[in-house]
Image (cartoon, rainbow, N blue to C red; front, side):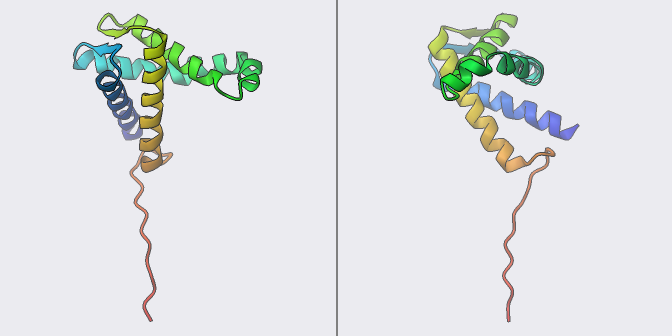
Length: 127
């Protein structure tokens, strides 16, 4: 349960960063940010695998660059579901999805697969 909450918070931070850095993205209020993060997590868990599988030939032909289009479309879908979440256009959606993806990737790298913060300690033996 703590892992799920932590991942929602990570996506919230990514969406907030995207709204601060990309001029075409605006989020009105904290509850909209929370709801958009929650729905984006659900959309990425349920809808994204199906869309990636259906567009696999195009993704292979574009050497994976079509995944940017898929991520932007899913971010646009979430924005369409919330009246307080606005994306100006496709370019803003692509940049926003890149920011959210990088934020999630960095945080997942630090947190680990089970949702707990992993601390790596290097111990040297003294002789």
